[in-house]
Length: 117
Length: 113
Image (tube, rainbow over the protein chains, first blue to last red):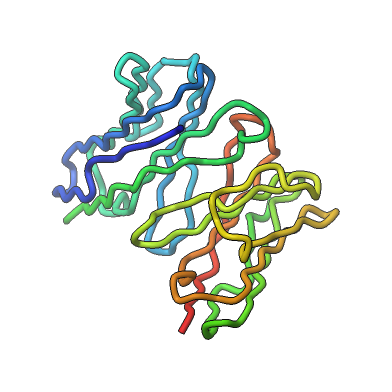
């Protein structure tokens, strides 16, 4: 069975601090996909990044970076120089590669991030 | 391209009633998935439709059903509503291939009284 764990329920930091959101996953599949989504107060989930299980390269997009480590089954997300607009709930998710189940996202419980001015 | 749209945005029903929620995917997307979000259970997968066929289903009772039309628009229906069905129902669309990112709509907030 697939499982995603986001152990940090809530994080609160002061603006301009760096913050890392942890994500640990479990799967028996050798091919799978990992995602991060952002859910602002409006409620809509916003896609941030996708990674497949064969691509362990870290990725940086502006102030956002992601660290994927298969050895520890982790896919962590770092925001550098955080801003108030980064305040949201962030979800890590996992999907398998088999076509029948490929669109089923298994989500973690989410981390509520609050950036204080 | 226009994003995923969901109607209605808010709904109030009473126990025992039924409800139908609608989702219009991004143009060109053939897969529509539905998720239920509650404070207690988080985000849970309901089902996915691809080319008018249900391709995958989550662990929800038969009161939850859905369908997809030839234009890829999808509806989900919940019959005999229970208080526990109060939730945010999110629809997501994608091209339907493994690894494709899913784009979510704004959701329908259902309150069951």
